[in-house]
Length: 344
Image 1 (cartoon, helix red, strand yellow):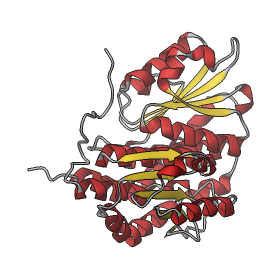
Image 2 (cartoon, one colour):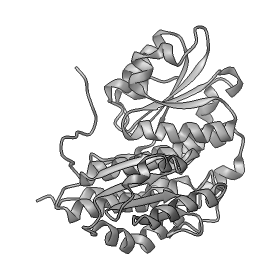
Image 3 (cartoon, one colour):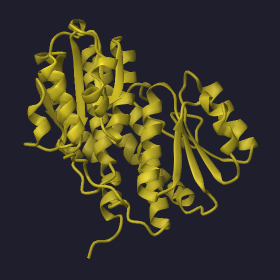
């Protein structure tokens, strides 16, 4: 008899090993990035996916823009497929980076196919399962099987595929020291999961909390979106993401004693972000912060800002899992969801 949540919990807790396996696979496949044109040959890079991988695309595009210095954006695959005229100029050569855990999501497949048919540029894919349809859609197809999952809601898959996108950005930017830093992430992830599991359980079991707000800016906004989605999917809770300072412009009216505001803190904008959290706490909201230092969940990873971004994910995923379990739900099989969306 299946136990509710067993797969989700195992997938969250196995991320240190999954990240190490993914890094080993990326090292072996890194030379394949060289099969694409040089970065200067592309007018822009579009990262695309659906659901979780759309939020991954937002985060990856922000990282790519900073590290590589190229125009980059994250788009839902349906936009690439149905509204290409809004994002591509006739005659340009772009790179489409399509990300899908299953490799079978209809919109992502059609985005690749329509992009190719219009001869807009080259395609690179990241996925987790061999011999799926997406694995034949790219000029280069990168497979990260460590991200395979039994659960519907992505946890291990998201972080593993995101690490792949960061590895691509570091490779194209020629930052070998950053690639070396990635090797420190599995141990840092393990420490976070061990040290902060009690905190995730405490917050997840707090029945006074009615809604959640995840705040993140820059490279962290896509991660805030993903953690908010995990809270919605697993626990059927009201949850929304915002850019940090944008939360002041209206949404802060909801920061009352029934709200939990979770901030993904940076070092460069720490003072501004910490002030937002302080203001929300003064209004009566509960506050929780993630960051390298001076946070409720301290990474203490000693890595650079570009390397440490996957560390924002594990404790937030645990929090969603604990809330789902406390509400008597099964996070392995969230209501009304399937592993991937297949259109007729």
